[in-house]
Length: 292
Image 1 (cartoon, helix red, strand yellow):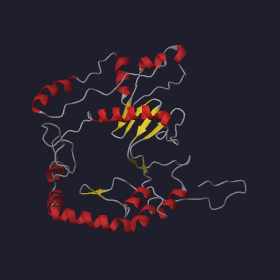
Image 2 (cartoon, helix red, strand yellow):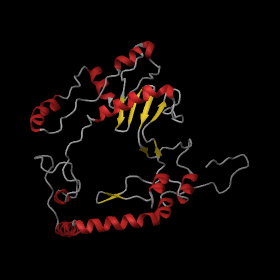
Image 3 (cartoon, one colour):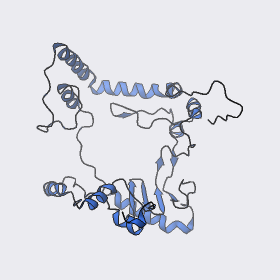
Image 4 (cartoon, one colour):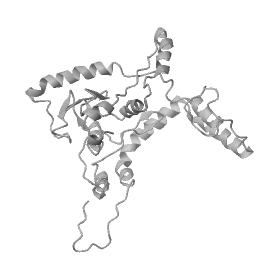
């Protein structure tokens, strides 16, 4: 690092993915994914999803000259950053401003009063489970902010995103540009066919290799040999497989999922408030201030 840059701060837009390209440049290594390029020669003629180039921008030159290496950062299918502006679309969970110390004792009290935050990714048999008994309650307890057709923030002047500029006529052009750019970028999202989401074969394979739910079922040489099983282990595995096959029926899965979906809201407050506990000093000195 040049002497004049040591101890300084770089304020450009940097993605965590950019460390790969940056370190490759420093090491003198080509960051190109040649294996993906070769695979595309087989994928393309078969109409299969193509593997994308490495999404990593080397930041080294920008760090040295104080410039911004990324003009745009495709945050998600609902968010795009073109510094200093950030576009956000649709419903965003956990869109809240927390205190400096979080979670705290008020978090637990809030859970008891349906003030959230509740989990958004609860699933059983890949069926989403909502703790709210209405859409309005689900949005409330997951701290949803609905940006609908677009929220626009200037993250340089407003880093905590309190001021939505979408309704400001002076920002209409940048708002429309970012919306059009995001729509175009979303066309390139890599969405390969990943097979059946919940497969009993994957569970059987996990049992067969000693209880490990591995990433690849049919890759030769991926797993080391499974040690010989004791009679007790073999009996336990056989019982486990019977249970898996008993549950792996559509009518059973749907019944259990629907039962949980209908029951979850009734235990919402009790369950959420049981996930944490608040400890306060038994005796506070006169000068002590307890912040919750």
